Amino acid sequence: MAVTSRIMLIICIITSLLYISTAQTCSSYTFSTNEVFDSCIDLPVLQAHLHWNYIPSTRSIQIAYRATQTSTGWIAWAINPTGTGMAGSQAIVAFHNSSGIMTVYTTPITSYTPSMKPETLSFPVSNLSAMYANNEMTFFAVVGPLQNGTTVNHVWQAGSSVSNGIPQIHPTSGSNVQSKGSLDLSK
Image (cartoon, rainbow, N blue to C red; front, side, top):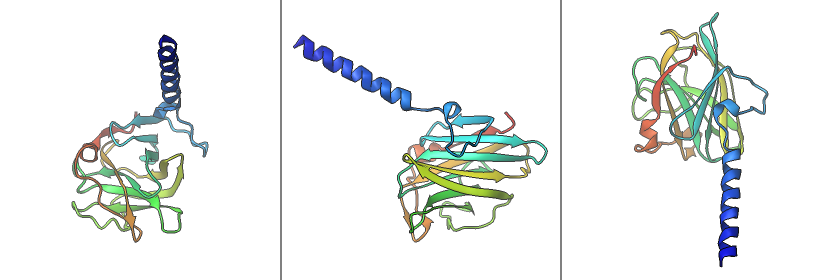
C-alpha cells in the first residue's frame, strides 16, 4: 500500500511539473512569426496577454494580443479613449470565419449591444493579421497615432460563438466584466 501511495505521489509531482513548465508568461513567450516585443503584460483575467512596442516617432504601438480560445469563439482587445469600460471602446476582434480562416477587423463599441460589424475606429489601425494555434488566438496590429498620450484605458474580451460572421454576446458576469484596466504603453 505504501509503495502504491508513493508511486501516485511521484506521478502527481511529475504531472504538476510538466504543467508548470509548459505554462508561459508573456515575457517567456516566443511567437512563431519571430515577432519580438519590448513590453508585455499577462492580463489578470480571461487567460490573455498583450505584447507591444511603443514607437515614439509616430506615437503608435505595434501589438500582439493573444488569448486562450476554442476554434469557435472570438477574442477582442480595445482602447477606450473616453472612459474606462466597454462602451466607447475602439476594438480589434478576431475569430474563425465560416470557411475556417482567421478573420480580424476593427469595430467601435458604441453601446452595451454593439453591432460587432467591421467599422473604422476613431484612430488608425493598420497591419492587421491573425492566427490560431494550440488553442490560442492571436492578432497583430499597429495602432495609432495615439491622441491622448501613452497611458490608455483598455478592455479585452472573449466570447464562445460567432454567428453569420458576427461575434455573439459574451458572458456578462465574472471575468468578462473584470477585463479592463489602465496601461502605460511607453514602459
